[in-house]
Amino acid sequence: MTRRGTTTLVAAMLLAASLAGTSMTVHRLDHLRAEAASEEALYLPSPKVLQRMSLGYTGLVADIYWTRAVQYFGTQHHLDSRDYKLLEPLLDIATTLDPHLVVAYEFGSAFLAQKPPEGAGDPEAAVRLVERGVRENPSAWRLYYNLGFIHYFERHDYAAAAAAFEHGSRIPGALPWMKVMAAHMSQHAGDLQTARFLWSSLYQTTENEDIRVNAAKHLRALQVDEEVSLLEKLAAGFHERTGRWPANWAELVTAGNLRGVPLDPTRRPYRLAPGGRVLVQAPEDLPFITQGLAPGKEPSTR
Amino acid sequence: MTARIAHVAYNTFREAVRDRVLYNLIFFALLLVGAALLFGQISIGIQRIVLINLGLSAISVFGVVIAIFIGIGLVSKEMEKKTLYTILSRPVRRWEFIVGKFGGLAWTLVVNTFLMAVGFFTALLSLAHRFERADGWLLVAIYFIILEFIVVTALALLFSTFSSPVLSAVLALALFVIGTFAEDLRAFAAMSYGATRVFATLAAYVVPNFASLNVISSVAHGQPIAASLILYNSVYSLFYAAAALCGAVLVFEYRNLK
Image (cartoon, rainbow over all chains, first blue to last red; front, side, top):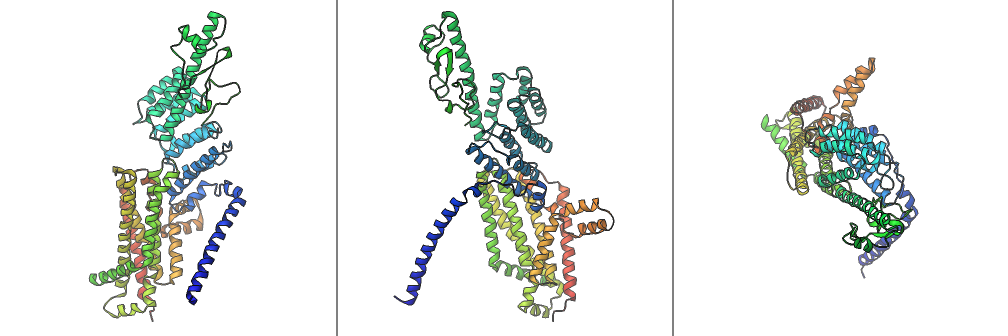
């Protein structure tokens, strides 16, 4: 072998060995520094400082911070964490750098408002965020919808929710159902029909697939809550008439109260428990339900 | 006179487009525009906004880098290679040489911006499948970016007439950074008193106002740009570039080239 051939061979072998060595070391380093890598930190907490440092490219830095907020929320949610302490500052930075980033107010407020582990469980911070969004974007009627939504579902402040829908309905371009929503809210606040109306309108008008899927889950949960209440009433009626609780659905069918075995939205039959209680078979497949759960069982939020 | 300036400008353009660094920078700018398409996928609801923000910011930043790093060598390189003496020994006056150099680099940047803009609009079309009426404002943002390049080029040329390439780069870059704070500097001047106020006001008027030329964030949201802003930005940039160019001509006119 020539001298050049020997050099090439040795160099190639050393190259392969070094590459293998670095991959093994990196793997080990990743293992050693796993905690450090997952540790979240807000290196620059001040939106004003970031605004200066962005050299005028504030829109781009805002996009980066919004993406950081999304990734942070997604990671904490995936880990079932109840700690979302960086969420509000990240959203604050993103919206200060770009006050017209409407999507950050819309989704950010939902992330903040929902109860843990679904969200940060801080509806007050969510309201503050959306109210700032409304001030910065007075023509964005949809932000009033978000505000009304938070007041209704998370704060149970029906008057504030009605006011938010009413304000939003007056903005040019707002869809007509905002006015209907405001009227409905002041008359039937707190009932299932209003909740269904809210989720249906969101399902029908959103352009985002994730929101549509989430709205569909809530609509299914409302259906279950309504059906379970109705079935329990039928069982109670049977008890009143016969002095005993029905042992199965067939007895209610025979009595003419039902046409057949009732099915939940997942096409599984409802379970009739002793004492006339009605339960769903797979609560993990029916997130957000508040009825039909076995005693002590928490509703799923996924 | 015009023919001589045009010849200098044409040769400056030819020399600039032969520079490999130029192509590397354009390539990276286009790469960033392409990356914006992927960036939007790890976020929510900002695919289009991030493409516009990242795309236009990349065009702006890379263009400024090209303007500075080619602009600072325009005079010094000619002196280093002794080609300046050949040019000036012909019937070419010093000011014609400076104006021609400026024109050549400005034209190079316009052509670069056009190429990067084509890449940017192609990426936008592949994302949105059609253009909207509000996309017309993106052209205004690109026009402002070109005005920014013209000012930066004039400044880089000014510095290159009296200092080394490294120092010229530092000065031009520093002035670009300070120029992005021009509005803050004016606000600071308005709040201060006495000598500080005089100094801050003077500084606020001397440094280029790059803040008003950056409308990327607004156009990303489809917000219209006022016609008066387009007019005043155009006039301001041309005046500022002309002032820097006159400064460069004056310095170069009296510089001892021996």
